[in-house]
Length: 156
Ligand code: INI
Image (cartoon, rainbow, N blue to C red; front, side, top):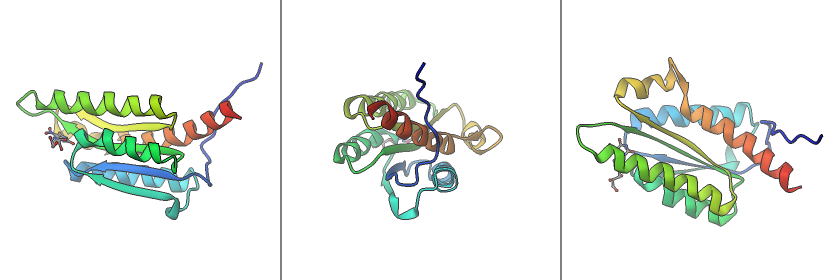
């Protein structure tokens, strides 16, 4: 049996990270987690990482799509935090972000990682951005590293 499994070392990879500015105090910790994993585990040089800031999670899919279509990046990582308020706005932003980001990956065949938190409260977002429950940005970076190698192995 031939088994394809991605490793997480990708020293020659070029990565784009798109980060939403909305809820920056959470997102900067997601970004820190993603960067740490790319450099320390992926062994990716700082020069091979491009960071793009967008206004909010709603804008993530378009930036991710344009980056993926350049074919300059082996993976794109989307980071953001959508925190429920007292109106339905949360649902609209979360829906567009998750379906939009997901469809870019399928349409371009460029691995795209979803490091976007959707939480009921600020506390839940803090817990998932480098405290009690890990760091969604770090998780997304690990997935990107693995998927780069899985897709490369499938295509080779
Ligand atoms: N953007 C977020 O990234 N997170 C949120 O929690 C959020 N909420 O709840 O409003 C949010 N809204 C802004 C949105 O992403 C767009 O930037 C804005 O609507 C302009 O298009």
